[in-house]
Length: 154
Image (cartoon, rainbow, N blue to C red; front, top):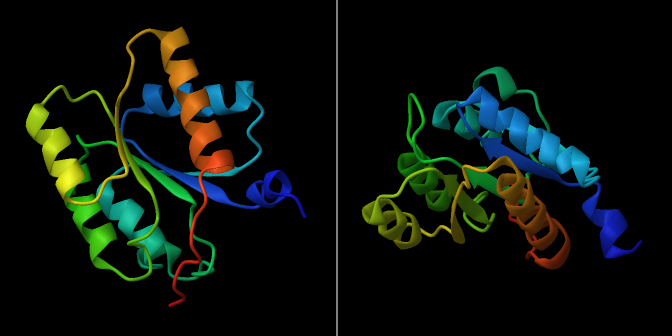
């Protein structure tokens, strides 16, 4: 099976609380014909519940991990920085690429993100066309070009 066909079997996680940004992201992926499942978590707690099969996700297949996590910083319940800390602290998730996809202009947010193991820090463009192009490029790179090691099993 080619890498392109294999990648269609994997999912991406979007951790975002702003419904408009969720819809824009999903629309951009759809426009560029990305076939991957996109798991949406609306806060850091929901993202960690999904990743660690807790709460309403207790019954999901723990072997089905996203190949990349797009994580906002400004989130309710548990912000993106704390969520990133938890992701990097666990053997099951520490190797999953995390892209901080945020509107934050705070230099400290970028420094904290990289210090905690973020793989990329991308500021969301305000312009819709630029936003779509950013999502297209992120999707192409992280879902088609980037190669991942085998993630540890639970």
